[in-house]
Length: 454
Ligand SMILES: *[C@@H]1O[C@H](CO)[C@@H](O)[C@H](O)[C@H]1NC(C)=O
Ligand SMILES: *[C@@H]1O[C@H](CO)[C@@H](O)[C@H](O)[C@H]1NC(C)=O
Ligand SMILES: *[C@@H]1O[C@H](CO)[C@@H](O)[C@H](O)[C@H]1NC(C)=O
Ligand SMILES: *[C@@H]1O[C@H](CO)[C@@H](O)[C@H](O)[C@H]1NC(C)=O
Ligand SMILES: *[C@@H]1O[C@H](CO)[C@@H](O)[C@H](O)[C@H]1NC(C)=O
Image (cartoon, rainbow, N blue to C red; front, side, top):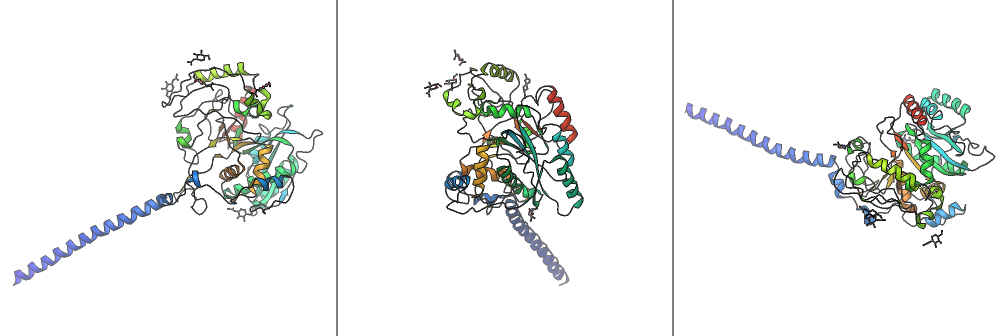
């Protein structure tokens, strides 16, 4: 009896343990299952399932043809459909005379610098380097800084007012200066340019942490299609960029219009089958605002290209595609053609489906530095009236460009990351990101200027 009870007791104990173990195992499975679901959800796997294919389905509000309305607005007439999106913040600092104070009113180039209000020393460095309006006597230029407000910081506001009084180059609009208000800053810049500074041929938008070669900008806008094709950087460099980049995101054409270059598709190998300079055709001359140099500099390009060939070009799977500028609406910079929205929830650039439902972005010029011709500026500005607000300014401009049928023009020399600096590596660089340190900017710019590259 005693033994029997003991046996029973032990048996019960055993059974309980078994049950506990099996329930633990079951619980483990359940936890694992839900954990996986949660993880997938976190990384946006389910969001991807519900994405809409960009290529066939893309429409973005306002959903209709806006060309007529844009033309009406450009003619100062009333459009048939009322605008759906306007940025109506007022200008606190206006500088209405900035672009008008010359006898000869026509400007070649206006630099519009998207600056953060507290970056006083960066603005000083820019005025003393690439922002110097007198850099080239034959390129009438202006430099203007655009900022928002810091409602809580009176000291900074007062300092800004003083700076504006001295230099008369600060435009301030009445919105809170913050990262997610970048689109507001950009569109208020457009608004200011259209209103007070529409007498320039080209406009360059630049952040205040960027190196700019004024000389290469001037060369580029004379003939964007032929600006020296240069080295593709290794993928390593790209991987540090703010948005994740796949090779397929990168624009895969070459900007030489009149040079016959064929790329082999073998990774890290480029084979130039025939480096012949073709005389420019009538086609390229049709792009009349860029034709300053067409046909004159074949010899020069040949030399430059032979120079390029000697360099170790590493590029993969790049396909040749001839590029023509379709009209005088230039929107140029570093272009991403097929990049996808971030759908994992921890990303700074996470975008919910409700905000943007497609699996790809339209082609866009990455923010930081880009150039617009006047026609492009006006069309983008008025098309923005019919484009639903989007908080990333580069994507927003991509959306507007798509509606306005402006194809962003790619140039490798707008470096959206910091291009590794050596004395001789910046010859063709138009812009490079990563110059937060004003002293470094001044140093690099002065050295490049002395070498004739800036
Ligand atoms: C953007 O600016 C507006 C207007 O000043 C302000 O109400 C809003 O809070 C700002 N947004 C962010 C994210 O700072
Ligand atoms: C480029 O060269 C290849 C062969 O070298 C030739 O087949 C092709 O027609 C050329 N293309 C142009 C645009 O001249
Ligand atoms: C390059 O072009 C020249 C003249 O057009 C031609 O004679 C030559 O065969 C070409 N070379 C190659 C490798 O295609
Ligand atoms: C090319 O331009 C020349 C002169 O500029 C003209 O005579 C010729 O007809 C043009 N050819 C074509 C195909 O447009
Ligand atoms: C070119 O680059 C590759 C790897 O990136 C390297 O192995 C090779 O030695 C380089 N060639 C020259 C001539 O610098």
